[in-house]
Length: 118
Image (cartoon, rainbow, N blue to C red; front, side, top):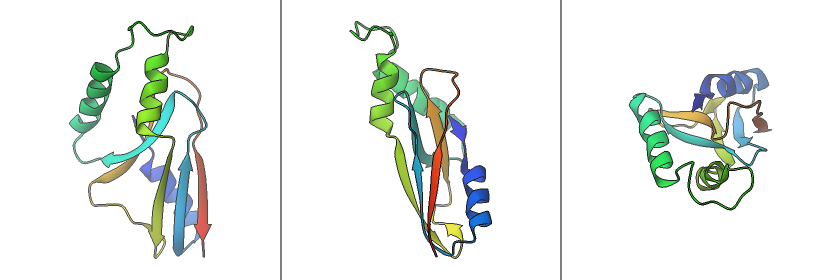
């Protein structure tokens, strides 16, 4: 889990959008994007441990690449998030951060960020 909150915030500040939305999209089948707590780093470990326990890497999956657990985790977490913007500020909760997750890596990945508004 990589916290990308600062990078997204920087893009928003550069855009000078006052009101609108940020659309985050991950164009990969083994990666995801989520918004969750960023105050306690143990939450990241707990999320990853929970996902790994629920969807272990070595089960009797049929997929020939052997990474079906990564595809399932990506589907469960999701590949897009929308964040509302007011006064050139992301409307996130006090403890929320934006996390990029790769479940079959490390790999080179991209996060598409679209800023819409005025």
